[in-house]
Length: 63
View 1 (tube, one colour):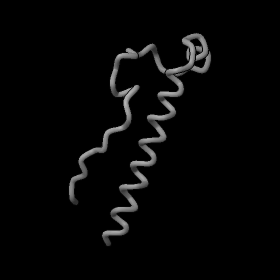
View 2 (cartoon, helix red, strand yellow; view 1 turned 30 degrees about the vertical axis):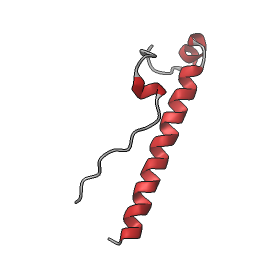
View 3 (cartoon, helix red, strand yellow; view 1 turned 180 degrees about the horizontal axis):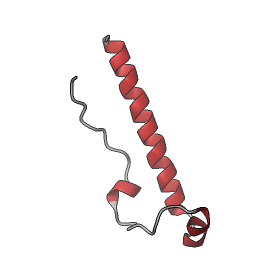
């Protein structure tokens, strides 16, 4: 595995995580009745920093 393929994999993974957090934040900004109508998960604690903060990079272990 070359260093470029490793970097590419990490960038791709980070982009996917960022998109997932951005989508979740957008959905949590919708009014509660709309979230219920579309079936977005149960009511969550909006004080949860994992929902409203930017994604944190994960520690990657060597294989």
